[in-house]
Image 1 (cartoon, rainbow, N blue to C red):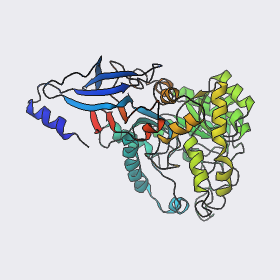
Image 2 (tube, rainbow, N blue to C red; image 1 turned 90 degrees about the horizontal axis):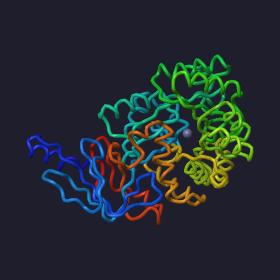
Image 3 (cartoon, protein in one colour; image 1 turned 90 degrees about the vertical axis):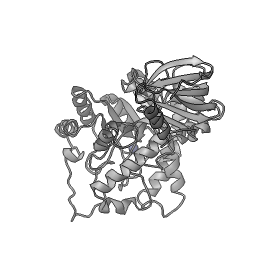
Image 4 (cartoon, rainbow, N blue to C red; image 1 turned 120 degrees about the vertical axis):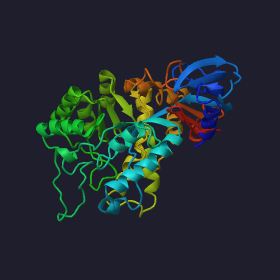
Length: 426
Ligand SMILES: [Zn+2]
């Protein structure tokens, strides 16, 4: 972390004046405007953007200059669907029996830093084990470890045998009847209790699994796994605590139940039908497509031994479908938020989603907006982050070249700033 220069400058100044960081940007995409601007200086002082001016301002004594003249400056990116405390691998099924809280927590610290260095300064963590995303969030907020701002769901809420039942596939000699506290509900009463438990745990948002999923040790990846009444009970209780609700959903029926039940986002949405898209537009529900996850599980399933036998057919069925659904949903006017489901797939590869979105027909500038100002507004963080404007926090990402011409530039982040600290510099 190249922070030494700034610290030295402050020392030489006797701590009198806080040195500013001047970013000389060949191009600025502010996250809101329809067009980029060129050759700008963005000045960050004490963690905030204090000036944006044309040309390359000469530094005052002690100022730090970031030379991004050959690149593009963007707001810090948002990934609205990650799992920071885990990363799926060939041995994930057996890990489930071996890992303790501390293993998961330490993994989370490592993956949080990788995510930040990939340019993502805010993430929604949609499901963990041992509620590990919550102390991770707190440690990052306290400046103890580097990482993105985390909007944490804690443990996701499922039904018995459902996609986030933490005991799926376990032999009966292990404890195997989890309840609302562990995120397993089977009634409206359970639904309310599970949400209130998450409030007590310190969650920021609620995640439910409305249908089967690919990676769980269970046969069906698509079937509805909650009643509409259970989903509605989750949502109405969540509102009492100021929580939004994200619903994992692959099959058409579960997607529609979740939308009618009032959730704020549909995650994956793989087999969304025309009626589902119409409902989303009527209700203003956002779609988080997670194209990266669909691609990754399909690619990994080409190796017949990578997934457990019960998972592989689901990966082959669900994976390739999401890209087409996204293309259709975007074209039809469904509101989109950028999200990858990273944890499925490697942490730090989040930005590969941009190329998949552009391949699905979304213009590059729109793909950037759904990863910056639009999620910031969704999360009620837009007064602070999500765009490059005077008064906003200095949460910034830089990439080489021009991502509007080559969207894969987003995968080659060279500059990251957050909390008045430069974590990566060209
Ligand atoms: Zn997920």
